[in-house]
Image (cartoon, rainbow, N blue to C red):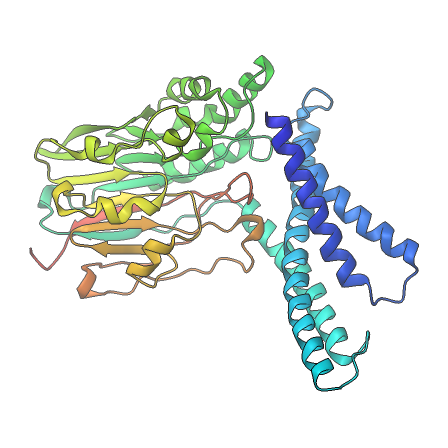
Length: 417
């Protein structure tokens, strides 16, 4: 099954690269053979990325780990050149139709064609390089203060580190996980929460299981006084070896919450951490996303945190009956329903007493480098935020995006309910 997926991804990437590159260099003063050679090189280099993702039987893993970032760059080139060339061709096609209707000549190398082709070439290379750099760069951390209504004084300063979308794999091996763990431990969190998508790649062979175990082994070094908890993401349901992966994760000290909640005593107060299975559980028949069952009939607490891999559930979790103070999610760069609530590309979105945190991924399609952004103080949303939000670590298998969320300090809101 995984071979079929890789072949499809490789074929699609090769076709996208062929279209984007050919449409970009077609007006260059090169021979047809040279143009075909350049196009074929980009197409094969991008397609080879998916072949190297799981070729440990043919090559040493060290060679694959060193090669994948290079082939990933060509995947990014393929996507960006395709998107930009397609947009240029659509605009050019409309322009050509208008000119023909008006009886004007349509030339193959007019000013529009030359300028737009240069635009595609320059920005295709720029976005390809910066997107790959974003996906593969080392993690950094910025703290954020989250205001919670009626938070007891004992819980002020309670610090949570969120990690999401590690996607441990041949592309992101143990060295990257070690960097994540080091960054989290330096923040000295009270609690570590991991919101899904732990790894990528099949576990149908013993060698693959051992490799994934080694890639996730640094998680054993996470330090938090009140525990380390996680939930499943959609990538935990892509392959049938889900239980093997969960066994590895648990062996390295992470408590997986599967539609369940735990109550933690903190300085005489209660903090509830709830976690639900990813929405993909129902689609694959391996489980179910039971938000209502998880949040119903919980004991009274002073702070309630929900982990749900996909942020699209935030409107439902905002139901006052669930008394969720903060939802932590990963998974995606954008979610239309959340975006409708508040026009923020990242940060806290508020509905009632519920605040949902999502940080958009970037990865090989991310484009411009991430800027340090600020959440401005907004009394209407009861958010008192210092600087947050620079990507710590982000990756997804199809977009090659990786994410790590940072540490959060909880404090009382100055406005009372």
